[in-house]
Length: 471
Image (cartoon, rainbow, N blue to C red; front, side, top):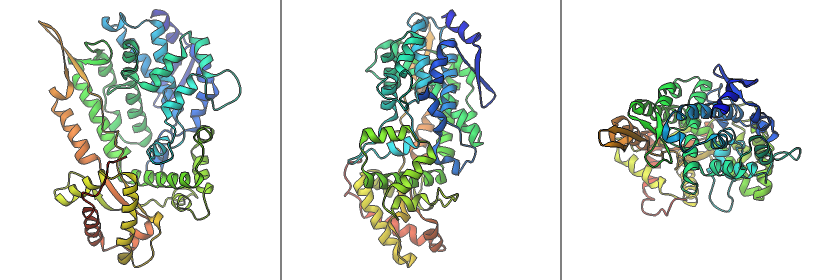
């Protein structure tokens, strides 16, 4: 791969991104970076409404994608010294990976994670991975001008667009061949370059330290290939860097991504989106094209104005748009860390509910609160926020030990109390269910917090045994 590294070292074009990072762009990647589909990512914020809590979090998918591209190159450089990797991966394979790293978020659109959280009922929001694959294959574009992204990939890199799309869409899953699974694990695994970049980058822009804890150089030095030859792993010396990596991710979810005020903003956006979609009923293809052509503010304005006058969406987004910040407030928080068993049980009852049951519970909460508030409460003034169900699922990290009888592999959690503790803590402490109310309702409940908590707990526990399968 010497020619590839020479193209990086001698690249005439570099792009400066925070924090004091120069991303080398070899000549063969310039047309991909300049393509309108990639440039579109300048208009897609990385963290959606989180800037309402952390004002610096205005960075974009464009910046992050360049960071992942640079980190993927660093992973490849390190792994090129590992014999088990070098004998499987050649320069065209490396180009496939670098293209996938650069384009892994090409299908992202404003508030994608909020819309994807609404995957239930009649409407299915487009998965950004699916859109990315279609864009890479040249079947979908945000622009009608110029060659397709797929044509540019094949003309400039000389690799099949199908391989790039497959890795972006499927990561390191079993639908890929062993070499592409190995490549995919570099951008989609427990210790991938995507997470390494966004943890540090999000942390920097949010002004918090937690995501910048990983020892990047030590992690890279500890990279190796698992015994099956189809995923990256860590050497024994890389074990501690793996522990720090997972702990940093845990802290970012606990103190940043799922901070209660962040979840309030996200819950407001998700509820507004759900109301808009139920009213507008856009066609999937038309809605995907609409999403790819908008920035964050344009989408919020479309959602706010697109429904009926005085709609729930309009009421909810008044607290986020119009240069105001009227975020909803907590009146009940449930988790498995509370000593009181009623909070545990209430958490489990709600966690098992499907979307129609949650909607019914929301109406019941309104009825419980009305006599306490002593005024009419509108439906949009109560939200029930449940944690995303897929974010606590992290692939295991294999640690490779070399002994007198040869190499052996063990899961990191089996040799690390830190990792075992993080896994338990994530479920018990980080994943919380909350009931939010509008600021005016919260003000009316002042001094009655305990009464409200008990009334809501009794309501939720009365639903035990009545819930169906979660959607």
